[in-house]
Image 1 (spheres, one colour):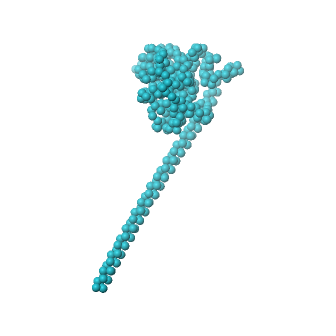
Image 2: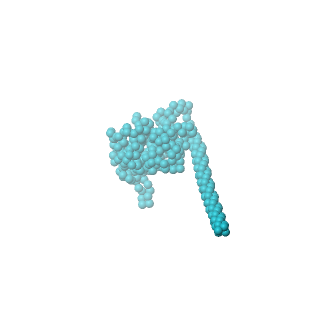
Image 3: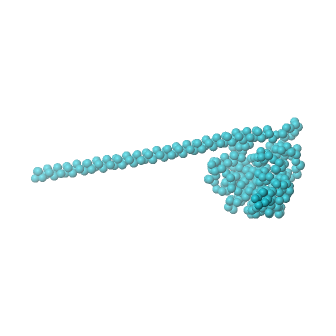
Length: 368
């Protein structure tokens, strides 16, 4: 009995020893798994940290490149403006210099006092009492095609006064955009004259045309033409980089323009973060930030729904009333026509009808 009991005890002890060995093996395996998981977690954390550092480094590099581009553009703008002023400013007598000093800063083209353009130094006829700023005389535009000449505009005679809200209306191919391009000194007439702010467009050099557009004409496009990698603030500021303004002046002018269109809170956003209506409002701010005498809008509502179209036109109507800016649209959108004070109907490159609209819609339903 004692031997049997001892044998059982030895068997139990052996079994307990085997269990302890298995437990140690399990513990060792668990420890190895924990170590492997910990190593994997550390590697993942290290990879994430590395990716974040690379991302931050890329962003920092992009910001530095952006700052360099802006700085370079600003320096080039200052140099160009200085060179252009030296080249374009005619010698003046003490009397005429005194007269020029008294002129408002915005009326540097064709001042009413001496009826002369400082851009070309050419005399021009005395302006009408209603401050005529654009005059089209017997204008014809032809394009040379492989199969012969194509006449886009023929014998156009029009005048536009200060503060007009006018539309060029007609089907595609009627000559709306061509006429806008000539008024904006982007193209020249084949025959006749386009006189903008006292300057005959066809007589201007490339640099003089650039000065006219840079300081006195704003453009609003159908497709917005915003730079996607830059913020809303940067896109609006670009219009001022070729003008002589300090950083603080530019910042004030840009924020004021964004406030006009209700986008001051979107200054740091990029175009991809905006809706179509907001993008078009940014393009309006870009056109208006330099306070031009003339704004040319080519199908500004074509890519917008009805609600955004009304809001965009109401915004421009309010700016037209408050800043007395002349707006000329190229459109066939009936929603735009509702707000126009004057509609010029074009067909086959000719003026078919020129009518005043006494009961145009107002901007009373929009707050900016």
